[in-house]
Image (cartoon, rainbow, N blue to C red; front, side, top):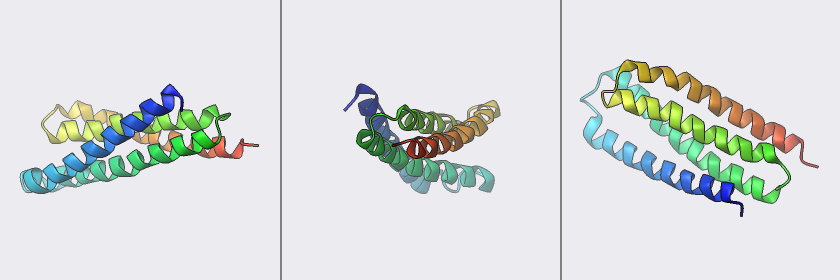
Length: 127
């Protein structure tokens, strides 16, 4: 296993741990203290973090099976960047950070989309 793959897998474990913690805190501590819009965004961030955290594991497993594809590994990094930018910016604004942090969310969303696109292209290029 390459160093890059180990870093991504550890990052995935951390992302999934944090998603679980954010979900629990949201359900027991945050819900009801935020507006409906903020609560909805927070729930979306938790959901996307879970989905893309698991996606990181999947991309590394495929990259392990197809080590010649640099695109598949690149897709993992794009998904990780998406988690940080998209979910992180939503969490930050939910906890009182300036609303300007919310401007990072679309870049995270784009990173998610590019990550899955690059993953698909990487799969198509495998011989």
